[in-house]
Length: 185
Image (tube, rainbow, N blue to C red):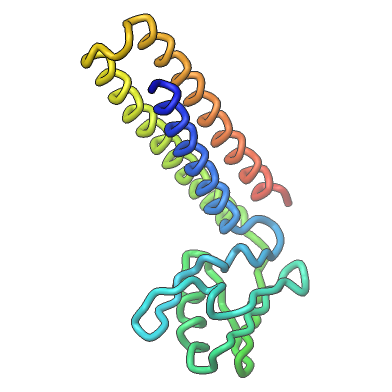
């Protein structure tokens, strides 16, 4: 029973880390990357859709992204979504192709992006702690129902805390790497 609770907690913590990785990949560092735009929501006929389902995104040059929209009626919606994103990008439209020249990051913009990284890391750490809280409640419930002993409870809590510490350290490590990428000139 305890192993099931810990396995579930670890699985949920791993999903949190995967989500953090995905969010951090969407934050712009020094060079153009298609992952910067992939998860951008586009209002397509009243339905929000990820950009990567409406267009092909490529990075032919280090400072340029090219978005090839498959449906010509969606071009203006894609352009609007890119302009309104917090990325600060200004696409130029050529038929069904949008070219996005990425300006070099200013020091002020780098600091804003670092703050955004810290915010995402903190959200991930809170999510990991919430998983720990839920698992602790399940362990306490087992103890209350006399399905485990107090010693088992203490050992399970220690294993859960070790798990929590490991995933929080991984979240911080991912944040530091992204921060280093952003601040690298």
